[in-house]
Each structure stands twice: as structure tokens, then as C-alpha cells.
Length: 138
Image (cartoon, rainbow, N blue to C red):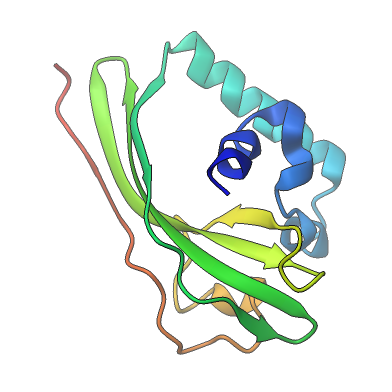
């Protein structure tokens, strides 16, 4: 699974990223591809680099509707212009074939208030913890 996450963060491999939630909210696949390409260009121009990216053990898979979901926590450090950003978050794996193949959504901005738009019916259930903090420039 680790290689799938690495692929998910390369804009040329958007096929491993679940885009349905964005498309359901009126954002086209072309808009998503363009946005991701712009983001990576900005990070590249700023000489950003991940200095740490660790995956934790996945939570047990569960079924909601016709889809199987899984949470995979991670910790990462992104360095941009001499400033470190530490992030603790999780990927949401989505499978429409009972876990044979997966697509992923980054759960960094996922909260109890919006999880239902990603996983219908999941409101109020436990989510992996998230946090983000930035250092002063060094």
C-alpha cells in the first residue's frame, strides 16, 4: 500500500486519487488535474521537500453503502523556504471492489462536520486525529 500513497501524490498519477467527492460538488476532472498541477508547480518553485512521511497501521476496513473504506494515519514534515510544517492526518481509502483496489482522499481537512460528504452515514463516528503546526523560518 505504501507505493500507492507515493503514486497518489504525483499529478501524473491522479488515477489513484478518489475524485468522486469533488466531481459530486461540481468540480470537473480537468479542473482537479489543473489545480494539482499548479500546486505541484508552486511547491517545486519553492523548492519544497518532504523531510518525513510515515504511514501508521491502517484502521480496520468498513463498509458504508456499496463501498469499502479504510483510514490510514500518517505523519509528515514538509519544508518550504526554510519553514517546516508538521502534519498529522490520514488517508481515506475508498474501494468499490471489496478492497481489491483503492483510491485515496487526503483527510487533513476532514472533520466530524464534513465526513458525511465523503462517507455517507459516517457522521459522529471516530476519526483519526489531525493536527498541523508550522515552525519559524530557520
